[in-house]
Image (cartoon, rainbow, N blue to C red; front, side):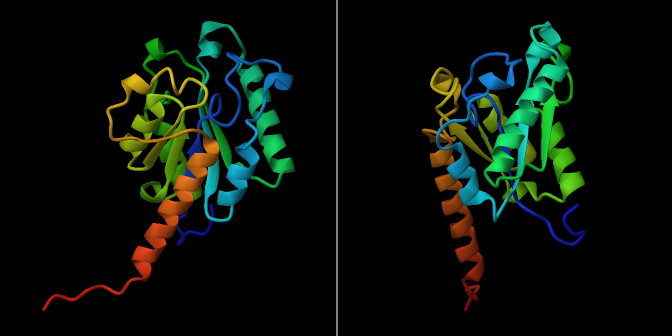
Length: 197
């Protein structure tokens, strides 16, 4: 908990296709490759936001990988980022298939609500970044801002978007958009209120 009276904004990152290359269901940490601009993007935001990773790993339910495999990959990614000075507050994994109709699979906002409670996150000042329409729908359901990246499976699913989403090329452009949005909000707060006549 980051102070009982202080609500913090956060960025909730999808993992595969957003922070790392999407190479299918990963079991070997050596196959988890960060995109070239991932570290730089997160460094630009680290002083303003808490970071979380929220990932659907249906390969666990399908038997392709184990939950231990998924957790090993997550630990590797978190470790790489930590070595570069980027802290991930928590990683949330849904190990179910969509047929399980669980509460935690994206776009259900279960993990965002958990983060809000555990880390005092202000969801309305937070962002969700991912390469699937479920990521932007997750943001909508939680009352956060959704940003859709065209890496990973992003280009394949562009036709499924409804037309009002923020769409950017990659994680670097997502960070740029978040910085601009945060600065615009800060500027709006600094402006004196205009009183009516």
